[in-house]
Length: 380
Ligand code: ADP
Image (cartoon, helix red, strand yellow):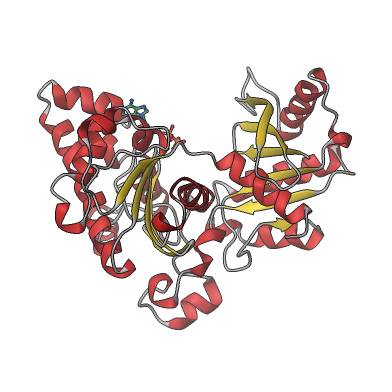
């Protein structure tokens, strides 16, 4: 079966076309691409122009939209409405639109992708796959804020979590690689420009570090992660910052960028190596926050069978992985330094005697989307 995966952002559209075996186990990427600079001088004028280009590229490779089995779209926020991937119907579009205030940067662009694709390929079934859905299994003590209940009921103010498609892929892939032994109590660390950790028990997310928005939790490229809400009140009151200014500060001027002058971990590590104190602190703080959450999730999972690194930093930086796992023998986590720099065929980097398995698994959100869409098409 052929499934096209579309990730429609505000200024770019990524796509990947998969061929999946009948039972969804094997997959092959038939073609992939990226259309950038939407709305800028050098790019297509709008999302319609961008998706027409995507379809043109597909047709150029001999794949016509009418011959696809399905199109799967990544949607950032599914709120409380979507606990799993869903076939797109008129009502689905309305519900996604209604969730836009929760993800004003992302949901409108995701929605445009679905709507325009629906016009360009009207006979191909479309599916929405949500970045929040995997975390809908969190219990109330994990997702509620200790605020008056009507804020949650009427305004949807609660924790949702993100990177769910990636964490779900990691959960499945860890089980595939380790068998049942490694899957009961899993901590998944997605460390890219955005970063989050998830505590996964028997394949279900029971907690994660991001909250109502992707601003919570770990230190990120340009986001601070966890911060005392009182700081925001102070900045408002004493420095006169309004919502737009705070938004910019928290989303684009904080994190590694604020501490080290760069949001690129490669550069931050190089600066730290060269003796830059800000960069050294950035690396320490980044790893310290991760270690705190590993401990927290060890506690709520009742132990740990596997710890998995993914995302650009998690996949490529042996140094960060070593710092995150240093002196965690008391939690049953021990890396093998040689394997850490050259993971084995299963991505294993733990020492032979380590009770917890530690793995590096490349992120593959697109494949996870394709698999979920194919499972729905097959009626699962
Ligand atoms: P996104 O979250 O935007 O998808 P990625 O998952 O690609 O981003 O992660 C980007 C981050 O990964 C950047 O901070 C980049 O510096 C970092 N990164 C990529 N390769 C390495 C490496 N070899 N060592 C350290 N960090 C790396």
